[in-house]
Image (cartoon, rainbow, N blue to C red; front, side):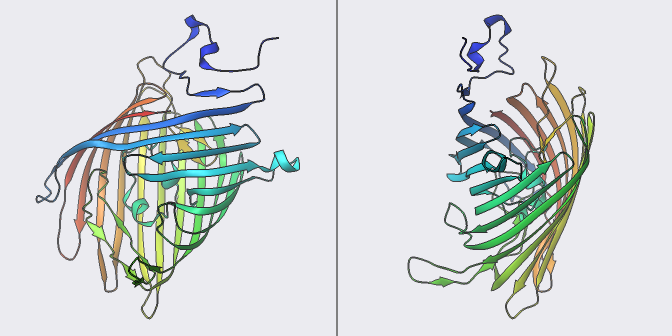
Length: 384
């Protein structure tokens, strides 16, 4: 009897296609799949019309390495570390209820993972249509936290609820958070998708005591880069908002995919309750369109999008245009306003190789200081 093992090496030599089959994992006879993942990005940024604020740069953007184990319909677990920023990313274990209870009541996950507020923020950083996330997503999205969540995914809807406590694996962001996300997908088939959703969360930050015994009261800071990843100077920044009792985040999201065309948009806001002061409000939104010139469609599964998978030996070519805006001015806090137009092109050479180019035209105003940089970016990416 032939062993029930599936690897790329099992295929006959004349059927092997390096564009789609990379032997990065091993499937055992019982269906247990063990492997490793890699995401490497090298970026080039060029700036003009920036009043000398930014310096041209080219270097690694991400060097992520991970390992996983999974068994379809039963469980999955992963550990990922970014050696470029020296930070932990996803570190979690998830179990499917059907394997334990005999019926599908969703999946339970524990560990360090992304919170469910923010559509674009929950898209893999290797599968985004643009090189960097939009302004409101950078400022308002809560990113990863330690905790647990439950998700129920169906063809026409999804629901996700999470509770997080203990900050992150870098030792920051102490406090607790509850969050939820729901979406309706009346159209959900390959190449034809309509996704309408919303999300809510409340985070209660905690103060910290440093090594010298100095107490830092709980605070919240909202800020964003001008959609370029190799810089640190931000054009809009609320500064530390103290003393923060809690921050409420809200989001509305929409996605339509019709063959090679797609439109995605999202609105996000945050209300920070401050002790002894009026609450601080921040808000922003983005919208973008995508056209895959070679005819493929953007991927969609379980409430999220994925890269275009090329059908031609020459790959797939996608053109994208995005507008994003963020307002961090409220009351006495003058965090500034910024709006960005981004024009981009993505060349998916294979399932694993992608080249990206973005041109960003940013317009900002903070405390009557106006800086309007023009940014040209390129990226080469390997991901599996």
